[in-house]
Length: 159
Ligand code: FES
Image (cartoon, rainbow, N blue to C red):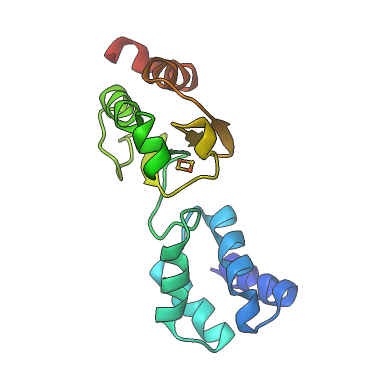
């Protein structure tokens, strides 16, 4: 708990306690703690003297800010129009079949969380998949499966 309180104090010191500090504070909490718990969002709201609803609204607006625990690796597939037209649904099916989870779920071993995302800024190279910080433009279902199996070979036998 002391470590947790220290983190918030550190972040307030670094980014200030005005509304402008909210986004960088949320980003750093996610980087350090994996996600934003309800408790943490309330603490941040108190520290910045804003409402918890405002903190939650900001946290839930951005794809990169998680409000629930995520797996070690976060897979995002773009769901926006260009990627939709370029075949994102086939990528989604291949990932779901390989990992035996649906969009929005985490594998039982907590190794992968799979989410759909709004435009990832690679519209000219769709469909696009991002795993953590790594971008995979013009991804095919076969390549997506290959990448997942390289990251976690136990899925090789399941596909
Ligand atoms: S529409 Fe998919 S990256 Fe923009």
